[in-house]
Length: 110
Image (cartoon, rainbow, N blue to C red; front, side, top):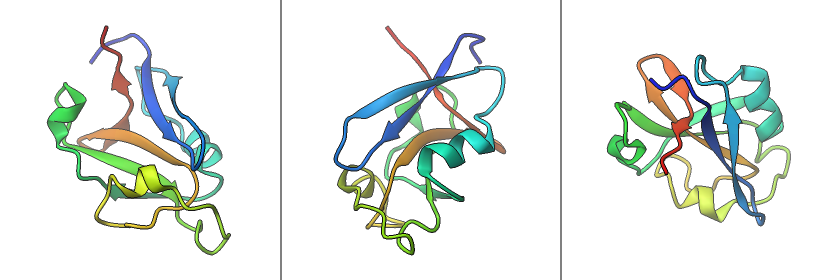
């Protein structure tokens, strides 16, 4: 694993998708993920193959707000298109990869 910065892909509903850096030596903090999605998190699998990460990932996942529908959050069509598990994602979603028990951001390739 690279010791440089890694990044998470943050998919906002009706806004631009952005990359957010995080420390490569550890997984993103729970509090950071909760802040990005606006509440308690739920992890859902995506259609993306693990090889999409271009490193030794087990799978690619989305982190979403588990109470998003109850809170009336806005539909997120870009995130919804990435997963069969929850085809109607609402609110902001964060795209990460898993390696074993850890969720990590992606290495940035030039």
